[in-house]
Image (cartoon, rainbow, N blue to C red):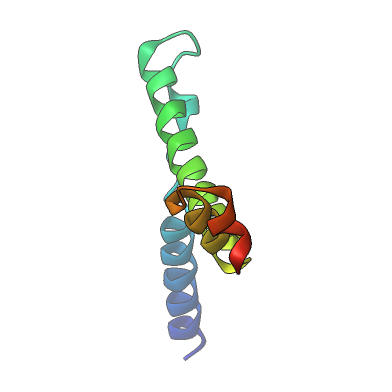
Length: 83
């Protein structure tokens, strides 16, 4: 019985570790190689895209997004000031 619990818990532990390591590891390449630069560029692009999307959402939720759209659509300054 204890053997079964130990095997099952070890199996779950191994699966959870492999699932959490989804980030690519660039340390396997030489630092001055093109593959290393490409790997770091992909990681940077992925993280910056997430941050930009979060920033856009915050901007729209703050109410400034609507005011900015209104400003861009207006032809004169008096249209912006009316509301």
